[in-house]
Image 1: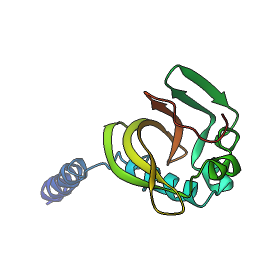
Image 2: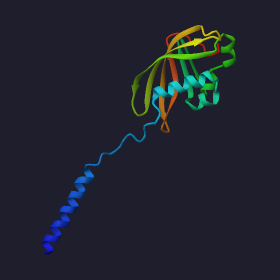
Image 3: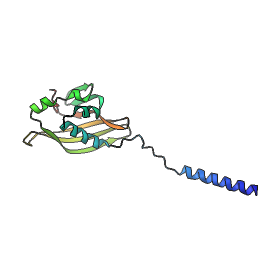
Image 4: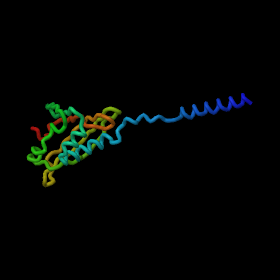
Length: 157
């Protein structure tokens, strides 16, 4: 009887081990809930609202722009943009034409964006393309910098 009891207990324990080994481990716990595409879309919304606090929160410091031959690094994103000068140059709002995820791993991502800027008469005053580098910082995607083949003014020039 003791042998039978020991055998049953051993089988139950081994069965429990087998079941435990079949449990799928979720290793995506460090991935942010908001995707890189959503992060860039929110950035454009914050830009249109000229919300420097939100833009600084959604970007990583230091922030960089590589546009054409110009290479600029700023303590924070808000230091790179001047909305008063942009408006004086005719800008009213920006609109995304397309977004494409170029690359993503658990630490970095690259998003391509085609966009247009409009004046107060809803006329296009600029159409351009930018590639954004994003970093996963504390489980949140943040924009680290932007690459553009041509100069895209952000009001600082």
